[in-house]
Structure formats: C-alpha cells, structure tokens
Image 1: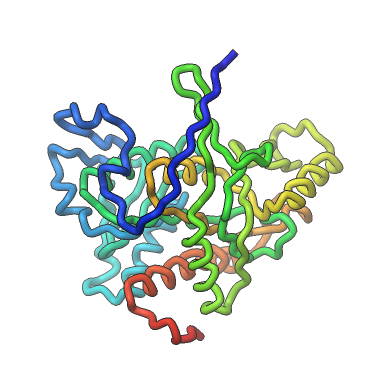
Image 2: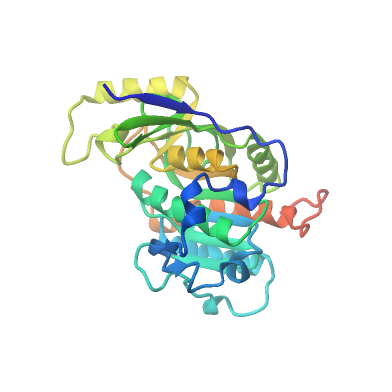
Length: 319
C-alpha cells in the first residue's frame, strides 16, 4: 500500500519573503549550472538577476496567444514606453511555453492541465530564486466552466479542491503519495474582490474551484468520446459540488495553489466562467462574446497591479 504524507506549508506572516525561501530543494546549491530547459534559460548563459530581478507580479494562463495579449494590455495599462508590438517572447527558443516581461510584470503561458502547469511552475519558481526576486505575487488567469453561475461571471478562488471536493493536491513521489494543502492567500482574494467592486462591468464572486485531470469525463461531460454515466448522475454530482461551495471547474488550480503555498508565494486564481454546467456541456457562445469574457480576469488583475503600484488612488472610482 502506498505511503501517504501530509505536507502543510507555513502561513505567510510577512510581506517580505527572502528568495531563498521560494525553493525547497537543497540539491540546487550543489549545481554548477541550472538549466531551465522548458524556458530555454540557464544560470550560466543568462544573467537572470539582471533580466528578472525587478519582477513583482507573475501572471500565468493556458494560452500563449492570450498571455501575449495580456502582456500588451498591461504594457498599455502601466503606460510604459515603447511599442507593444515589440514585446518579444523570452522563450522563443522553445515551443513549450511563452514568456513576456513588461516592467515588473511577467506573463507566462502554462498549457492545459496539471502536468503542464506543474513543469512550468518548477522552472518559474527556480527562476524567481535565481533572479533574487522578492515579494512576488502570482496570478492564474483563465477560463472555466461555471456551476450555477451565469456565463461571464468571474470567480476568485478561495480554495482549490480535487474531484472528491477535498482541498488538497496529491503528488506521487518515488511511489509515495504526497498530499499538500491548496488554500490560497485570503488577503489577495479579498483585495481582488474589492478591486472588482471598482470595475462594475462584470459580476465577481469568491468561491471554491474544482480542479480535474480531464475536460470531458473528469468534469462530468456527456459529449466526449467516452461517457460512463447518465445525465442524472452528472447533475447529481454537479449539484453536490455546488452544495459544498464549488462555483467553477478547471484543470490547473490545485497544483498551482499547492506549489505556491509550499514555496511561500502569495497566489490567486481568477477565472471567468464560459457556461453554466448545470445547463449544458458545450460552449456555444459567439466568439466575440467569449473574447470579452476572457478579458475580464485580465482587467481585474491589471486593476489590482495598478493599485499596488500606486497608479490608482483608493478614492478614484473606475467607470
């Protein structure tokens, strides 16, 4: 029988986290060179402190095109010099991920699913460590299926849960099951909710997010190549999820929350819902409407960043 280990990260007590506390791997200190293979970066060939040392905010999302668009958007929002069309992909030497740096903001794609974002996070956290970054905040911005919510609703995650509705992430390491907590930073969630009140263009709530390992059967869809359950069983499962406080479903939040928590990184998950799963499985919303929905988490996080940088005064209401 597999052994099970429960690992709980300490609760953050300070705004100031030393870079050394981000990584939890003593072997890194014995390496002459650390190759961040999927980023096409390394400690020997790149001056990581010079390239990334001023990073304060990291925004990650599934689509490479979407994260490029976000980089261009945040460039305009921060009123930085230069042409947005000149923003280049730092990872252009690889086709795994895309990365864009805009002032103190890093925008990175992570692909789809737990394995893809997990690989990216390992190398991202090492990058922040090697670059001696301090006080970094991470945001996952993306799309999701809603439960009992109107399409277009933005969900700020307070807890990421697995398919059994448990606030934990299980990782198999050397044949042993490691269990890590998936609680996200409560202060960031509340600050984001406050920011949403200053952007009265779309509904925003705080709720639990369920992370699955599949888009079809794993999320109770009836329209995949395989389906082993009835419509009634699907609806019963989704209703139970709703009763526990789950308001949306996606495929990355548990490992994102767990790794950030263990590595003392403040983090938030902000996803817009594209449909109400209690009413259907397929996304049939027109493309232009979906595009506007997808921009909502970006606008919310941009507002948060601008307030943190002192570019928006507390008493200024955004139209």
